[in-house]
Image (cartoon, rainbow, N blue to C red; front, side, top):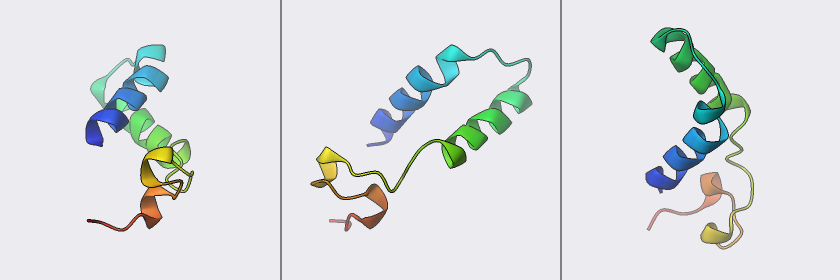
Length: 57
């Protein structure tokens, strides 16, 4: 699951932006994660439940 998230992060954000410093990259990526990534969105992998509401096995 983390590999899928990292892939999404790279394709949707990192590869589309240029960062002057590592500090800037960290701040902007953290902001993208909190603002853009929707943990409440329904996912087919989770039987159309949000990841935050999917019970752990």
